[in-house]
Length: 403
Image (cartoon, rainbow, N blue to C red; front, side, top):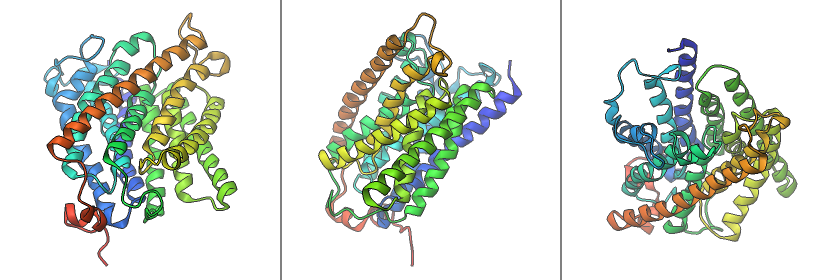
């Protein structure tokens, strides 16, 4: 039976999660690149949203949320042909559930944009995104949320530490390595052209994340309220961690650092948000902020990998940290909702680790194969001349600023 309150909340949450990509993530990433590449980033996010919508309707939703196999769903809901108008998922219309889950499918490949900004062919972006959605995101989402083998094992991932952040983070790293660095990296890369834009995008992401995490309760009740609370606490805590680190290390805390810290806190709390309490959120925000900052330094400065906008360090590491933290802080003695009957903290941690390893391996291997295919079919990189002049005018025939 459809509940009007739950339905109204999920419609609102769906709008909030789409708002995270359009325009939140687009502006967050757009401010971090050269002015000559602003429109390319906006175009990537906008086109990915459109492409994923079509693929989710045609086959993605059916493969993720129908069937009862261990590895992948079936085709019973292709084009939603098997879904009558009055179909219900829990206490909400299935059409609303379809839309809510679509917004997750949209933002996940959009996160990967941060790894290849300023140097990837537009056709390669489109082909990679389509294949990645169907071959990486959809199977993992089915394993965790669609009743697949990880769900049967009891893995806890409330809103996407595995499904969204780890898949995007490790795939972004693979793509960054195979694509190669930007010209001049790491010493001669120009700084973000509009830090204010990045902050505005981060604020939109922060607000939208309430729909992302609290909406994943699929109801307007206590679980949604606590998910929203812990989400905000973790984001604020991790932002302060980055501010303090930069103030101590450089003497000048930056708005880009504060914004990135908030996103790290949001990614870290995502898998745990429906299972833990406020105290745990504070600790997860602290750990997530610190771990993600350290990983940014390791990826860029130790390994010299041009994961341009830190997708692995912020989303991959934050998501994995949150997945493991869930095994600890979901315990009722620590203020969580409690583990499954008979389950121990150690046992749950092993299940969570199994999920991380499986998703990491799948994402790395399949992404590698997709990238090799895309490179053979359409090529990956723009020419050095186009990279130097900027993608906006060369690929899209427009400039972000006409002055």
